Image 1 (cartoon, rainbow, N blue to C red):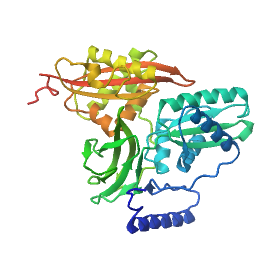
Image 2: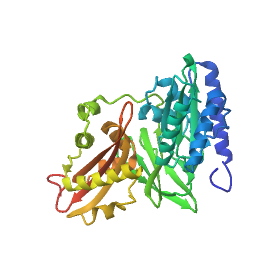
Image 3: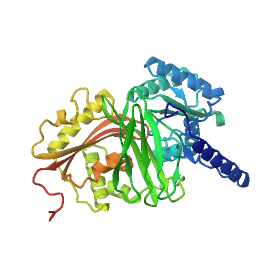
Image 4: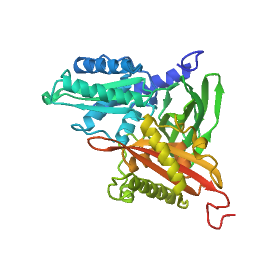
Length: 421
């Protein structure tokens, strides 16, 4: 697909063919063990939907048309939805970690999709279920700029069950491998799709530090060398920008000098313990976020940040705007961008911001720490104070929607380290 002058060079085609051959040989030796695609962003043929999936696709398309959205069916998202449906039961929603695992298993670099779980003892065509599903789809479609669709469904035990995945696909790249050879970086070529333009590409390294990668732009296209100087996992993030501010267009791991980790990530009991008992008020969740934030800083040999009530007030106002206008971003229809909202913050020489829609403080912190750009803000050496605002959203069957804004500043004449020079 990219660049426009041609698809892929002969070397790339040969490499893909070799990997596919090795994959087939491995399958012949151990057919019971599924193998993940060795490359990200390999095109798959359009799926052949049947039965219940066809009916669900029609329902989703009707809801999308009603809100002015267009969704293209993505065979890889179908496979993601199928994996998630097999790994969850009843009406429970898959965890973000499970979704992230399924995305990389099927070679998708796009952000985590919106997942809608459908379960009912009634037929899919029943009036009550249709009305509820249409309402959930319309609300979901209005919250993001979704343009990809994946569906998996089952009618086992006479109880219809389905997972619908709504994806945001706004960056296209040539295929590239999950694993790189140490000391031999691979050049990633791609382009951001309208309305976005590529603003920067960042990487978190195996040691946990964050690097800005050098991006070479050529009209609509970009190219960047994927790093591979240290053994272990890197996390790559492609950031785009439009009139609403910066937005993560892709977030994915690559492995340098080691095999890809394609198993689910275990839970972090330390993070769960630090979060403390379940918090039910916005103020308690703000303090959970603060504890998790400072714990991650401590693990990286950084000092704890000081709570700033004035920053927290500004953050709560922006979180309230995100809930009211149903968006997640740095530019508010009412309050403007970050500097508009802060005005002239007294004594601040540096201002940073993280925003999220999440369903727990732990989920938000894991998501931010898995994003090189957000991670860099949390682990900034230079910031000294933080204010966090949380506003409660909709009550779901198994969780409460949260809108969260973190504001970081460096106060003038305040040293980030005691005894710093």
